[in-house]
Image (cartoon, rainbow, N blue to C red):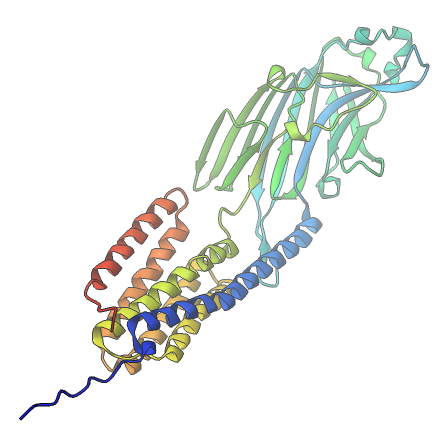
Amino acid sequence: METQMQPQPKTSIFQSSTAKMIMVGILTLVLLIPLTLVQDLITERSQRQKEVISETTSKWGNSVYFYGPILKIPYKDPTTGINNYAYFFPDNLNSKSEVTMVKPLERSIYKSNVFTTTMQFDGTYSHLDFSSKGIPAENIFWNRAKIMIRTTNLKSLKDEVKMKIGNQNLAFESVANSANDSIESLETNYFDYKLMENKAAFKFDISFNGSNQIKMVPVGKTTSASMTSNWNSPNFNGNFSPTSREINDKGFTANWKILHFNRPFAQHYFNVLPELSKYAFAVNFITPVDEYQQNERASKYGFLVIGLTFLIFFLIQSISKINIHIFQYSMIGIALIMFYSLLISITEHSSFSFAYAIAASSVIVLISLYAISILKDKKFPLFIGVSLTVLYTFIFVIIQLEDYALLVGSIGLFLILAAVMYFSRKIEWNK
């Protein structure tokens, strides 16, 4: 009697591991749409913060740009008969600045870092040479000489500016600028430079309310500058770096020494005073990585988090033969997207670290509980919870790192790839 073989039921192509993987891959790509929307929200909130900070600091004081003192002497050009000005920079210029970061200005949920600074200057002028232009002595109006200071922040001056030069005391007044000149000027009243000795010493103080940056042009033939502050995250930039600096938790101290042959401009000009801001040295009082930058960096790992989480579920599904519907994958993916929405909303009212811990814990607990109902077991959901905890911790560490972020990220991704290859080695992809 022949035994008839029972035909094996054919497995639908849509039930194969390959088809399921393709559908999960497509879902991962679809979830990039809401992830992009979240990233746009972060950008929008960051831009809103910049607008509010700009508006707030403009009332307190913007960046401080300082350029001077400049000796301004009128003369008559012997060839044209037109009256012009000659501008002379000091031989020696010494400055000492003390910058104090004050309590941040608050508006709604946004805070603006602002400072007050007192800048002390002294230096000397020596013999002024008009011979290079062939200007006779009778064409030089010494008794109408002025001292000029240029800045972009006149409205945030905290006190009157007065100078002692030689045996004279001079007071500065603001002067009108041309419409296309964004740099404002202070000038003293007239004084007779010829009444002084060939070498004239000067001394003055100036105080500002400001924000973001202090920037100075080294107009002295020899410029020596020092700056101290209680801000511990300075960014030294501009055309010259400090010759020495010391930074600790309490603040920083920096010193500059710039000689005239270190810079590409002259010690005197006739007729036109050029704009020399590109030759300035500067200190930015920055927040190294603000909350929105950290949120933005975290969101860039969104694709990695979604992909790896789906991969974990897919491997569990393939190994345990438990069927997970594409709808359930969708719910898990939406929960992962919600992490970034929670993160930015909590960060705006707290620190990034606290917000990250709350958002990550909430999503991990939610997905782990959901996995219990899907997988009908506590072993796999526990593995999923541990895996997500490790993944979010790994991303948090990368976000905090600066110099070693790429190295740590590359090593971490290599280890993740090795783990995936190990656990996927026995899966039968044809079924």
